[in-house]
Length: 168
Image (tube, rainbow, N blue to C red; front, side, top):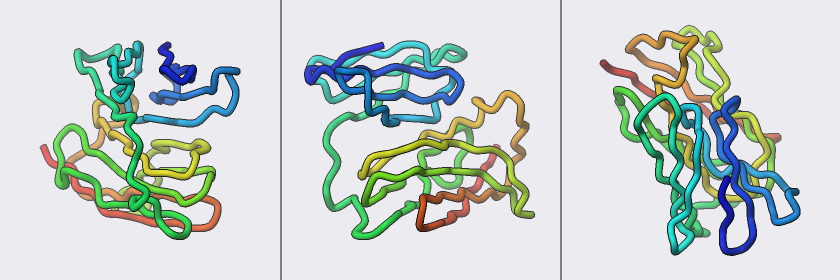
């Protein structure tokens, strides 16, 4: 758990591999970062614009920028799903999406036959831009083979899909 200079509280959740922010009254939960590998600790830097998230099963620390995003990144209407980077990728890739208003967002992974693989995130987000770090190693129950997959992102009004390529 960590607290910023505005009194917001940040907590990790191993079940969703996410970091949540609550206001100082422990209300208004939003996802600020997801795609971690069993997040187990949080730390803020002095300037309060970088959140360090340690991952329990690895020796990797994810650094999440908490700096304000550019208003240009928010789509005029609905939902925007950017191409993941890097693509193709080996172990991890970043998936970016933006929403123009608060909404429930679901990000899922499918194979080339259209078969559902897993839900990557499923939560309520405020208007803004978000980065999701997809770590292939965080799927202990799945064996993802090299190949093409599809990231499907939807909110209450729109659905978008991007092709991603996993290599070894």
